[in-house]
Length: 251
Image: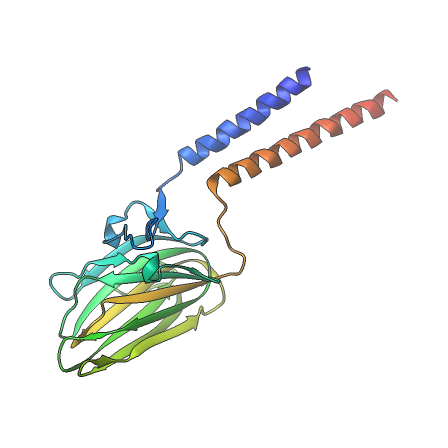
């Protein structure tokens, strides 16, 4: 009977410790695009801090969003709803960013954020809208090992590519480009999108993050149950080993 009480107490204690660890965790990770197909819960990515952002079904975590611009006022950037493309498609985690305004001249807006999780490549896709008769918009995406300083990567560059949408009268071309990370998969990176307006606006653009196959996030409750179960099996195995050793010594 004493053995059962000790085992139960230890298992209960392990569960309390695990729950305490979850309760004392850092920033909360919220759903990037909200629970509804047409709901946008992140109209301004800079308002996320200190919380992080995740997409249902993806192992990736997004944080440290920042927006700056050479135009005044600085455009507001939010994350679009699942109905607009934010979500998971195969191994891709897609974030669709929406801009509230843009410039008609040679203006640059910079979107920066950190992506944590095993990523093997990046992709972007967008289509500009004309603000004058003819114009264009270019987005240059750079992935860096450390946070950008004055829009420059002073660490290791994992990716560096761009795409341009050209507008003639009211028609604009689709712009897209992709690149595998230099050096292979990375578990953390800082991403910068330099959005350059030249007589055209970018109402929204999609960033895709190619994750390693099979990278999924278990629900917190499931992770806690698994941890408790594994700990319980370990304690039981330890107790049985001690009992076998004691029996062997007596014989």
